[in-house]
Image (tube, rainbow, N blue to C red; front, side, top):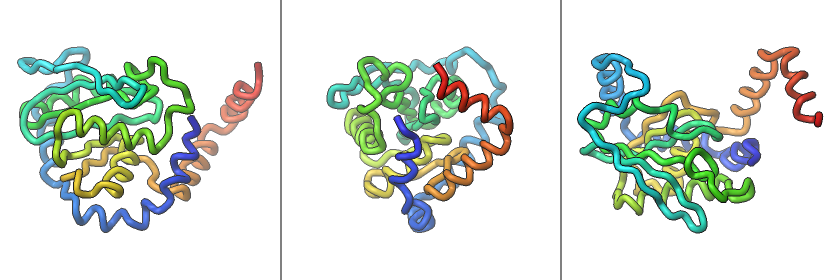
Amino acid sequence: MDAKSYYLSIGELSTRYKRLMQRCSTAGWVSAIIAAWMATPIVIGQETIGLNAREGRVRAGSVSLYARDIGQGPPAIVLHGGPDFDTAYLLPNLDRLADIYRLVYYDQRGRGKSADGVQPEDVSLPTDLEDIERVRQHFALEAPTLLGHSWGTVLALEYALRYPTRVSRLVLMNPAPASAAAAALLRKAYTTQLGDLMERQRAIVTGR
């Protein structure tokens, strides 16, 4: 999977971003997230007490997506970062919102528990967006919030631009670059920061 191709395919995002933000209010969600983090001690390795997560699979063509559903209230589809991560790093901390929101997590195709039988050519920006739609339909969510972290914010923005009536709100945490130009700046800064280590990485990639 070539991450550069993702960014090149969404070059128009930055010019349409402000208009989209006017339609998607995040004030309530931001307040809820801040309150949840401040009110609850950080406990690593434990599920939210008193709430049972429901696990299952979502069929996406020939791919089976792992999904996890917890909580009650307004629904939100959680889009993890990466693009090569899965939902595991968000748990259990994000579950603190499950007492007031219904959180629908899923591992994006080719990642985590959704990797079985998936080839690199099976993963692209269009398939990732189709999978969000399949998850939405599977859980019968009319217009959920999209809660994206890092790479997941790119998917959230792109999906909302294509299907604005199927999204009620956006929550964008630590957003990834939303244009080819911004992605190029990030790669340049990353390369500069690594210095000599970047040359070692290139040697590893090109070597046996």
